[in-house]
Image (tube, rainbow, N blue to C red):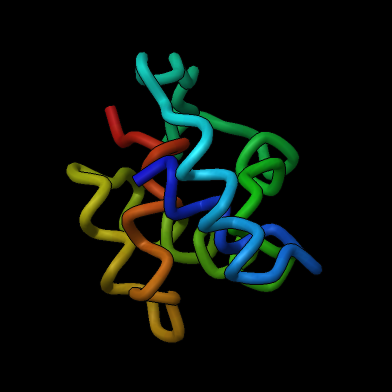
Length: 96
């Protein structure tokens, strides 16, 4: 969820994040313009906060191999894909 992303902020300790969540809440879900992984440029996919250069390269190599992802869940088939970050990565990506 969006609130749990607060715990990933660099140098923000857990107790501070918990205090923030006690004081503030997300009332409306932010609108995120998803990037189509099938047509996006390397730079567009790399702009995802959870994707580093190495993972982006793996995504593009996989995309070249399969021609087109039919489902965003196919990202899970990439060797070394960080499954623990899948839910956060797909907040920003889609396969159309």
